Image (cartoon, rainbow over all chains, first blue to last red; front, side):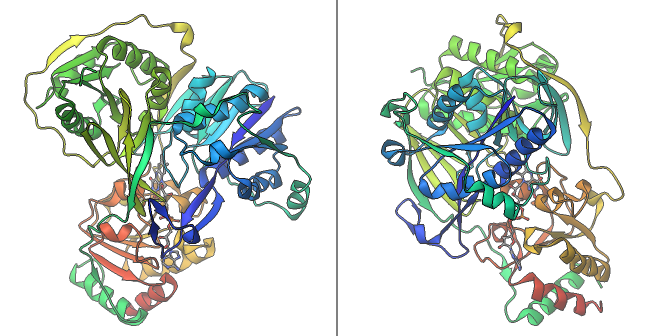
Length: 262
Length: 319
Ligand SMILES: Cc1cc2nc3c(=O)[nH]c(=O)nc-3n(C[C@H](O)[C@H](O)[C@H](O)COP(=O)(O)OP(=O)(O)OC[C@H]3O[C@@H](n4cnc5c(N)ncnc54)[C@H](O)[C@@H]3O)c2cc1C
């Protein structure tokens, strides 16, 4: 059985940042493995550990810098990785469709039985790539999965989908399938020192559009970002000033005044 | 292009969800800008009952699709695609709910519609402009979509619910369901997160987020809870980490709470968290980041380190 896990390096904004043009200035951004993908990687590695003959492959779309992020997946036990990038991809603003198409091209080469991806990427927050990928491949899928019950080789995945308001839906999904993984499904491991060392020798295969048999038109999109700004603060909050003791004293007064604490 | 808008309502276990009525407002505004009609689809379950409830101001036609008892994404994809083909609208709009996440990207892919998700604002003037958030709600962006037709999903709580009334036409729509293409089966539902306390009843919630850093630091918050006779709740990562049980989680997938005072400590204020606590009477936030979105909805704010502020507060209450 083969499990493909999609991972994304996401950017996080520092507490103090400035917007330059239509993005946050590069110097205010820090890169990390997307939180939701971390849980997807763990789910993949667990399947690999439980089954006898399971191969796991991580795939990402990202510049050379993102190899650092993929190495984290490799250090946690993923067998090997594929990284899609070239000048055309670098110059494009990738929408859901373009991402799904690039990942689908890799999936068509790898022929996985199961694809795991995060529910959303925390930088762009589209939350759509996994399901779009499934549809493109003609795979089944389930979104917002917080429990996975299957063993390597099973033709069906029994999942729980986490709906709003503390309700979970129990669903059976025929394989091959894409599951978008919600945080909390497992406890992502830390990479061990040994894992980190082993990751250095694992393969990260670079792929260009050409390698995947795709033309540059694949990354053209009618969707483009036109502006970025800090939302006008709707805040009419009263701020407690001073040092921590003074702030705490003011807050204590408020809590007493509201009658919730004495 | 017709200028028409097709909006797909969301319901669960016999009840339309609030966002469905907000969707009607967003859909109507878009239809006005596009110069077309607002069509609403409701699929599976008691569709006739739902149609009655969805008859609201601004809705032109409601299409009932009686196919199944509950949401199944394979059925939804087929139904929405068939209805879209029949109506040829300029826009598809749907809630960015958990079920929206589960079928809208598939429909957009099948119909080759450009997709933007989680819109907090929409406007149309020759082309669509979508307002969205990025980087964990720290910034807003506008996105132009230079193609028609298009698909967009909207965030709950951003539009007013449409007012009751109006005189929508109700039509039943049927299509040939391809059973072989249904590869998923919903087998049941389960409520989670019962247990010792109901944070929904609490008057004073002290709520802790990822700013607490380590499991052992939760003790500090426990001390505060004891000293003030409060009830402890949390954001999602605390529960994901297993530091508190699921019944303490506030938010979209946790519990909705409405205490007199909600004290958010080290919580950024992500939209899914805010969804569960914005109805609190008084919101107080303690956060080191002056730009944290939680301050946008807070009544009182402390920009500061919780590891300084919380011990001082405990002392105030003689802890
Ligand atoms: C489908 C879906 C459903 C979800 N449902 C929920 C839900 O029900 N509930 C929920 O909460 N989330 C939910 N989430 C997750 C949500 O998107 C956020 O990831 C989560 O709310 C973030 O929690 P947080 O604010 O504790 O952590 P973070 O966003 O990491 O924020 C931590 C904050 O602590 C501050 N901080 C750090 N150190 C200190 C210090 N020393 N003193 C003071 N402040 C400090 C930081 O400035 C930051 O603002 C859901 C997500 C999805 C996709």
